[in-house]
Amino acid sequence: MKEVSIKVFGTEPPCAKCNKAYKIATEVQKDFGEHVKVEKVNAMNEEGDKYGIMMTPTIVLNDNVVCVGKEMPKNELEKIVKRELEEN
Amino acid sequence: MEIFLITILATGLDTLLEYLSLHVLSCLVPAFFIAGAISVLLSKETILKFFGASTKKWVSYSVAALSGTVLAVCSCTILPMFAGINRRGAGIGPATAFLFSGPAINLLAIVLTARVLGLDLGIARAVAAVGMSVVIGLIMAAIFERGVKEERKTIKTAKVDDTAEKRPWYITFTFFIILVAILLIAAGGYIDPIPKLVIVYLLTLIVSVVLIFYYSRDEVKEWGRETWWLVKRIFPVLLAGTFFVGVIGGVAAIYAPSHDPAIAVGEMTKPYLGDNSFTSCFLASVIGAILYMPTLLEVPIVGNLFGYSSGLMGAGAALSLLLAGPSLSLPNMIVIWRVIGGKRASVYITLVVLISTLIGVLYGGIV
Image 1: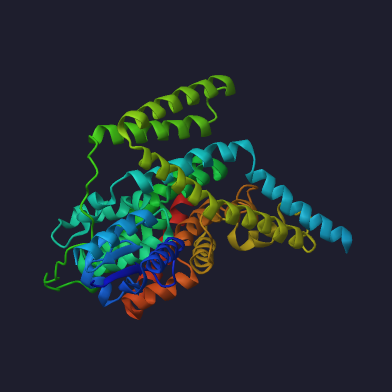
Image 2: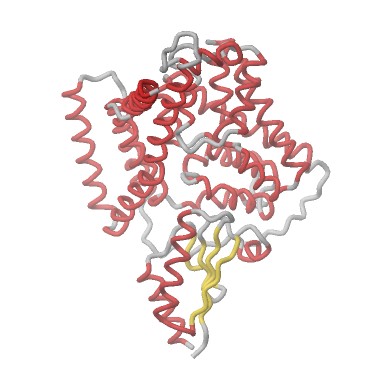
């Protein structure tokens, strides 16, 4: 089984929605265990440039942008994580 | 001492009740629904593509000046977009235009200004903010990008492929027109209460029909959630702030000549902010630029604290404060400073303060 990395891009200082998005991601991580890594990234640095982040929160899952400008519902994020884990 | 305390708290409550009255709520409730709909039901990616490096300059500037209403319901969305437009897209000009106009033409703020402080000041605020943002953007570009060759890297913008079925544009358009109509009719004082209620009711029915046929269940749910989220985030702060504005008035009444808490602060600041002179407007813009004001609280600050509503603050000075206020504050200056560097940030801040002052003087001369 390969690992899934979830990057939550937010602002610094964090805004309410970015915190929510990060919280949802960590909850998903707890459900799937060690195969899922969650990381909080400041959107306004080089890493943000790399993905072309314009709106926060943006969620990048294994280098794919999956959600822009809103918190992703937990069940949707879980669905994508599951699919990624099964593919590998 | 006890009597003082009671007076002070009573003033706070009075000011608060003024903002809980029907005529304020009847404009804020529909405005919150529209803000929620904008944030959930409009595709922002359509607008974002106008900020690309290859877009014609005049298009970028116009979109930057106007899109604040659509894109920037939450102030924390503005800085990442500003950084994005600046570094990866249309450059410093449109980026600063967006940075300024975003918070300044926020729909909720314009509606509340027009309702509480008067239609003329509300319109002046919206029009001046849009015009001013373009002027600031053009000056910034002229200073910092003159002679710079267009070799910005175009990196693709992060976006998700839209899988949702597309609605025809006229449905979205009609939907928002009806929402705005509800707002105008509910907030306007031109129709008697009974026919008004009937018209608003009928319009709400039309909205429901549009929702049932053209929008999915999830979208409607998300609209409700977003609206509630905005109310929860903005409304308590507005109420607490308004109460606090009243309390300050109560405290000031102890020292003010008239001892009337409703006008005490205005009375004391009248010598400095009371007319439309350059010094009044300049002072008002500096106050606006430094003071951190939570969304919408600039309205009671201008109307009640500095006494615009009781004629103690000049119309020009009021407009200057409303223009420089929402876009700048001390904490926000520090963030801008870090994103674009000291030189550009200081030019931007100076431009905002000076142009706000000039527009205030001009507006004061007209009214």
